[in-house]
Image 1 (cartoon, rainbow, N blue to C red):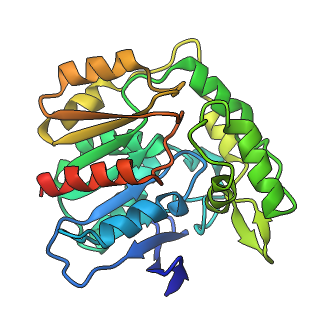
Image 2 (cartoon, rainbow, N blue to C red):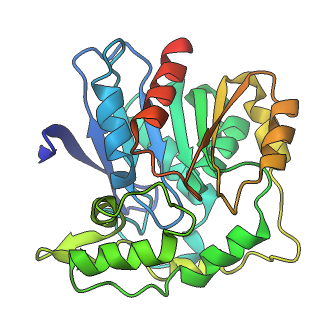
Image 3 (cartoon, rainbow, N blue to C red):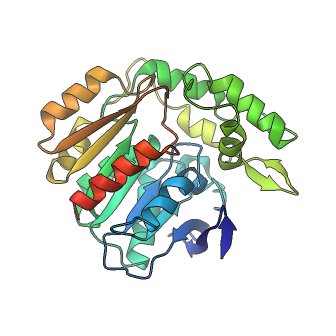
Length: 294
């Protein structure tokens, strides 16, 4: 087991359908009867993004629950794919479902940040028995082209800093405009989630070829995911939006509320795309939402 800030987790590994070694971070509990949580990260991100949330949920004062944080192929501690064309939400959905089958996880709470929320919506349409409740972190059926263009601008192009101090400075310079609520001391903590570590220094945390797959999106005619979102209508759902988000608009959230019979919303002030899920108010709101829908 590994330890960070006094919290314990286990590193799990499993083989994908095409024999890649994929990694999942597991926060265990003694009583496995409560609905488990599966966390799905953003496009270039990894299981470390959910450490604060997973620690809270696995030690919840009322209903502690097991949490599984996924590293997609080509990210975090998972093996890279030789074919960049496999870096798609559909393949990543298959990988996640395979893991859930291996762990006998059914009717789980799915928490999806950005790309992870897209996968969650697809899961609702293709394998609804896998999930029982969903949290969408700054993602919806319509993605704003401003945000998509910004993401295209940095995927595969950001250089790996030489030190953790430089990594914190880089992330602060890139993001502080849309994340004024993040304190200066928090940026190194965030940097240690964003980057892998090798020999005590920051290291690349995702396959740069991911940019080739993401670059196939046509910004002139972006697809919406309303059919997949409508499939979520059978599940209690919470959508979280960063107040400064450039990917999920307030107007889209309003339309989501109109089309979903049991959708709650939460806006995180002072944060953009996507809220980092490391401040007490947000994680407590997620915990309360899950308890109310067990």
